[in-house]
Length: 417
Length: 151
Image 1: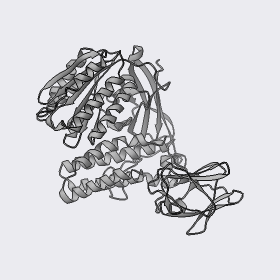
Image 2: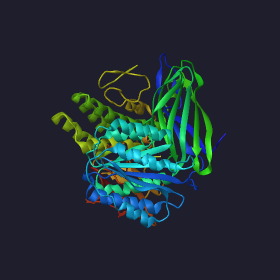
Image 3: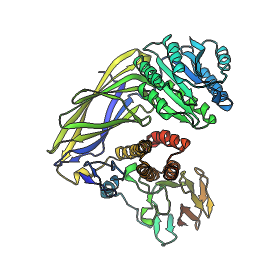
């Protein structure tokens, strides 16, 4: 049995009270490297796919150039780099190659010149080709996609390229700068490839966010991680999401009536990953029950370890005593509270999109209350402002929508540990 | 099933939040949660906080680093001095508001990036910047006022 990664869990109560009907339990699953920091790093195979449409002119493109030059400085001789720019068409500025002459690479980066429109899929297609040249399972294969605009009519192609990337072990980080791009496209690209998406509010934020992304890349410990959860017959999974490193939806496949397979992607050596599951317990009698078996399979590219396995039994205790069932687990409660703030704003936006303005306004106000309880005053204010925008004009502002959507995902990062 | 106290919709037993309106059911659980409110009795300590409005004296636990704030079991925040009973929440005291610590013979107060700030003798303190305190100083956390009594 492998021991590089540990699986552990916590429930929202130490003991649950026996009930005549089924009840909800909240389950946190922690996936963490067993020995903290990872010293050996797998080579990177990194492709930057950058929007060079006309709207990128000025500070945006200049900061992108600086940010990419910084990344080149941080890469090592064993890493591979490529750069693709796109408007309606894609152009390979740096074909996939090892880092040899950094200055020559930076000169090529400086040739980025904005003009014309935006077709994200053309850039993704070309980016994938550059990555494929040096693709290997013992590398960390990654595309960083940056755009500032809406893509026209090629959303479906974007989704397909993201799925193709996932099947080849390439994760995509999709970054949107400014307020003009569609969240759905970038979020779907990120979700399908098991990567992530984020909002860069102003051109000034480009350089720090690229630097963060580089730090993330250098802290990847394990990849291609999959969790199988096999539930006992009195237990059903209601939903499951990722809560660390950030809140995000997880795509999972039922592989039998009582069993799901969840692709969780990369595990870093700082936070690892934490998942929050809601399960129905349909248990009537006092006692200890194994409610599920969790199995994690992962690769550690730096050590050439593939398909490593670790297992954990998940056990709950049921009691007839009301008093004994009162003891709550503050960490699980805190995570659940933060996820519910995220859920409320997500559902508010869905309701607004479907035309239920009154319902959406109520949800946003509820989200604001929750955010205030969490001491997230700035986000709470944004939620209230957008509730006001909704009730007055029937729509939310682009920047407020993006701020709520992307900042509430990070609520779990600010946990008191 | 649990009926939501806000919107009346039905929710599953054990749910922490109302599915339809987002109302917090965890507050109900929290109310039952055993409180760890436990002040060290007044007397003996050389430093006290006196609530300006009521004259109540709060003695410090025997520690050289005291957290002042509001207790919140959900975030696992149990400050050494919990202002909940003294209107802390209404007066804008953060859960982790400020700390008071001793260095040599001197005491210092430091604002812990609280939402509504800490004021010493009506002057707003910069967050994370300790300021010395002496007998008779007025300390205000959000809008909650104390007098420092040093003996």
